[in-house]
Amino acid sequence: MKTPMQALITGAAGFVGQWLASYLRTQGWRVLCADRGPVAAGDDWFSCDVSDRAQVSGLMRWAAGSTHVFHLAAVSFVPHASRNPVGCFEINLLGTIHAATCMKECLPGARLIFISSSEVYGPPQFLPVTEEHPLNPMNPYAIAKAAADQFCAYYHATESLDVVRMRPANHSGPGQADSFVLSNFARQIALIEREKQEPVLQVGNLDAARDFLHVQDVVRGYELAALHGRSGEAYNLCSGKAVSIREALDRLLGHSTRPIQIEQDPSRVRKSEVSEIYGSHEKFTRDTGWRPELDIDTLLDGLLSYWRVNIP
Ligand code: A2R
Image 1: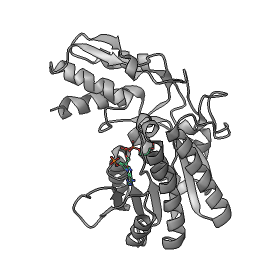
Image 2: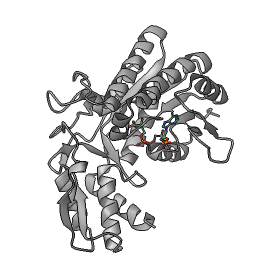
Image 3: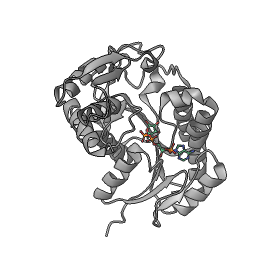
C-alpha cells in the first residue's frame, strides 16, 4: 500500500491553516498542526513559537516522518506588521529561516512550501505581474516576506533544500478575520441586517482594484505546489483579474436585505495605496494544472453567509 503523505502545517490555527488542514485530510494526507500558544487537544497538535529556534527544532523532531512542511505561521495583517516591525521580522523572516534550517537538520528530504506574498512585488511596473517582476516591497510585512522568500531561494541553491515559494494574491473566505476588507464589509452588512449597527457601512479607499482568490482555491493550489511544483521555484497564485473594492462592495450590497449607506472613514485608507494590481498564474498553471475555480460572487456569498450565522 502507498504510504500516505504527511504534512506539517505551521500557523495551522489561522484562517488558511484551518482550511488547508481540512482539505489535505480530505485528500488522504496525514496532517500535523503547529501554532503558537495553547494548542487544541490531540496528539496531532504541537505548540511552537517559530521565532524561537529551539522550539522549531523541537517541532521538526516531533513531526518526524513528515514529507512536506507548509509554513504559514506569520503576522499576516499588514498594519500590525507596520506597528511592530521587530516582531514582524522575528516571526515572518527569522521564523522562516528557523523552519528552513531546522528542516535540513531534522527532516532531511522533506519539501518546504513557503507561503510568501504577492506584496513582495510592490507597486506594479507592468501588468499582469509575473514572477519575473522585480521585488520592491513597500512595508515591513512585504519586506520580511521578500527577505524570507529570497532566503528560501538561497537555501535551495546552497543547501539543496527542496522548497517551493508561493506568492498568493489577496485571499478571503468564510472564517477570515474582519480586519481584512471583504470580510469586514460582509460582517458590517450582517450586523446591520440584525440591527446591531446603524445602516451605515464604514469603508476605506474604494477605488483600489485587487486580485482576489477564494481560500479554497488557495489551499488546493498549495497541495498542487507540494505535489507538482518545481523545486526552488517561486509561483504566483492569483485569479489573473482585478476587481475594484467598490465593485465587490456593490455586489455584497446587492445581497443585503436592508438599504445601506456608505461612509468613508479616513482611518481605513491605507497610505501609498497601489491603484490596481493583478497577477499572472500562467507559470503555476503550466507546472501544476491549477486554475482558479471559484469566482468573486461565490467568495462574497460565502462571506455573507458566514457572518450571518457567526455574529453573536
Ligand atoms: O497571531 P496568532 O496568535 O493568531 O497566530 C498566528 C500564527 N502565528 C504564529 N505561529 C507560531 N509562531 C509565531 N511566532 C506566530 N505568530 C503568528 O500564524 C495564526 O494562527 C497563524 C497565521 O494565521 P492568520 O493570521 O489567520 O493568517 P492567514 O490568513 O491564515 O495567512 C497564512 C499565511 C501567512 O503566512 C500570510 O502571511 C500568508 O498566508 O498570506
